[in-house]
Image (tube, rainbow, N blue to C red):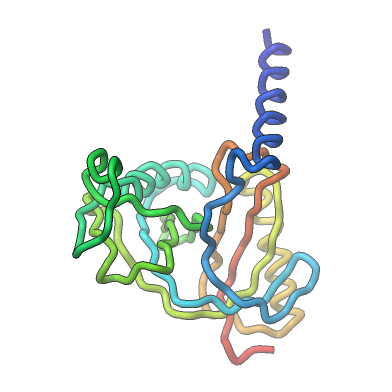
Length: 215
């Protein structure tokens, strides 16, 4: 029974991987947070990010569990669990099926430590402003404007585990020190793929804000 379950799981992973490669299932969100690469060094990058708006929720739990807990209410928000603001064009049947506006998902899903808890956020599409985004029905979800910023980034694939997070965070901190960048904020864990994406095809990153006047 255990062997059959393992075979079924492997078959499912292979099937999903093939569908992603063929483009049947998207490997990541259609839109990605915009940034300009200033410096590239193997798995590391120095980036300049444009201003962004985040839909954010604060949750308790460990690194791996917090993201799962936060994903559902955030996904409900972009799926229509919100209050419409202003005149936004809608097309049937979406306008008939949704209570609120459906918002496209934008990569990445970010997670950051805040006073012993986790701030998990979805990046909103660049076409929205704070004035045009619909207010969440869930009061625990907050919309937050993030100004343009410079970050040091490390990219890796694999499982969403605390062990891999800490390993690559240590690598990034060494790269930051070697390049004499000045850290100006807390690390952000960024995930670009849905949970059903095979671990070897996942894009994970750790982003650390650094001072714009650095090297």
